[in-house]
Amino acid sequence: MKKFLFYSLTILFFLGPAVLLLFKSVTPVWKWGEPFHFNWTSRGWESFFMDPRIVQALSLSLMIALVVTFINLWIAIPAGKALSHTNFKGKSMIETFLVLPLFIPVLAAALGLHVTMIRLGIANHWFGVVIVHLVPTVPYSIKVMKAGYDRLGSGMLEQAKMLGARPFHVFRTIELPMLMPSVRSVVFLIVTISMSQYVLTAVIGGGNVITLPIIYYPFLQSVDDTVMAAFSIAFAVLPVVAVLIVELVSKWLRTNMSFRSRRSS
Image (tube, rainbow, N blue to C red):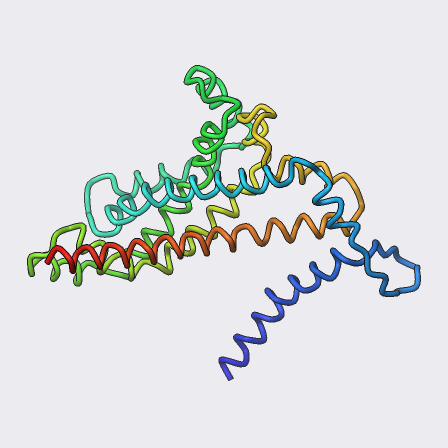
């Protein structure tokens, strides 16, 4: 019964909207009062690929999102471990301070950071966009990784250290495999947030960094549901591609490191 309920809710809330969105991207706009009929059209996808900047925007959006994701993981894993397994004075204050960027208006953060980006010489550059995308993403990644370390606990890590395992070996063989559900959540969440940033990218990128939202958002003023559905599918597919890339990289790293450790021993 529980499995049936789970699969039913999955189809209803996840697969159902995806199928309807795909169906909408290949059917013309239907207005209320008109007879409902099936007329297939490729106009939505033609409008999507007609822009010569779309390939560059897709690749640049994916690259920026992946770089932002790896920087988030590099920051969030040690921060989440410290907040979960260490007790120190002012811990609750630091946790509150880490989520403060979420309460800052996006436009205020973008305009304030723009001056700093100009002084550093990374304004109107994709690396400046990566840095500014860390503002709305790092608090989420730290919270997710802290929850992952809370579930992991410190018992197995202390046992491995007592047996003489080195910190990196403990991380590779115990922490990383046990934290993969949290890592997947961080990847999907951060990629989605990074790819949805229009104001931050427009202000810091200065029109030189063309990502998918820069091309997509002007279509919001139209009432063409067919074109909007095609763009929405592209937005939905890119986070899945990013998760697959991270899965392949993590699998390769675990396999390569295991082979090297066996070879050295």
